[in-house]
Image (cartoon, rainbow, N blue to C red; front, side, top):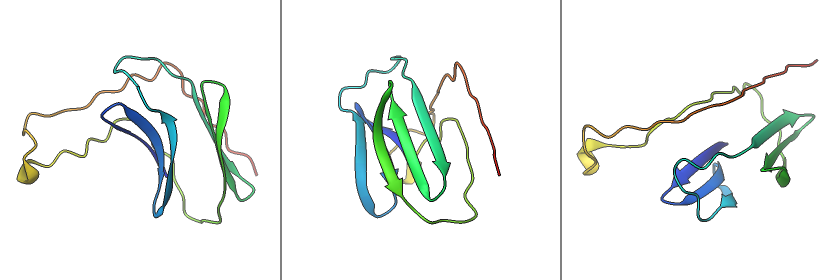
Length: 97
């Protein structure tokens, strides 16, 4: 699962399942509050205080990353100097048994 931005559409991508739309008209620079909670066989997502996803899933070996991972590819016409940037104002990670 990953949170993606394509154009102005901000959404949760879940492999072969339908995407979960967070924002249809996201503007670069807009500050959002995103919470992701995983445990007990579920992944839940809150966007700006509203729960937008409650996904029942059974996976092992999962991991967490935060940042900007551009999907540019010069062999498909993207500029070699393309880049991405994300600002994280607060990040809290908790692990419980």
